[in-house]
Length: 145
Ligand code: SF4
Ligand code: SF4
Image (cartoon, rainbow, N blue to C red; front, top):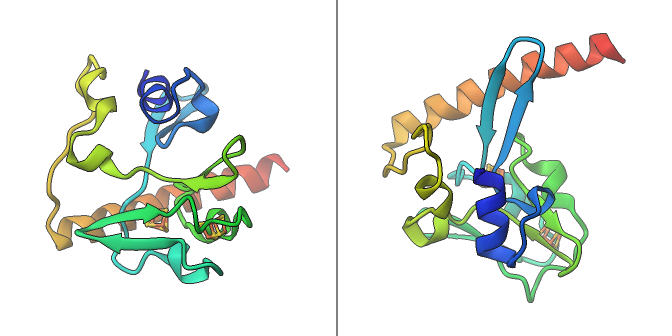
């Protein structure tokens, strides 16, 4: 639901492929984890952007659609897989928190999502957790390959 709501709000269509939030679901063990931009302090996506299209202002990482040349380097650089690409527009997309009023949260009926101004320490804990989960999934993927 969050994926569909996001794509409708940002691009006017129900299409989870262009959502800025992605839910990873493991059918085997019933594990589900929403992935979205962590608004990293050092935002590695922006560090590799050759056109300076990515900036961080007031704690929010944004892509300037006009500056983006569509190289997708930021998708490779994001350690969480949180950057997506809007092929029709030819530019990268990430969660910009809907300017502090995320639309996805309003439609999450189990109330699994919430929006809070995170303290730095909590932010780093989340990043650490996400990295660990990424490693676990990476190992699982290697076993499957
Ligand atoms: S897109 Fe990825 S690397 Fe960039 S700020 Fe968001 S989580 Fe960090
Ligand atoms: S896809 Fe756009 S925002 Fe991402 S690195 Fe390339 S130019 Fe920068």
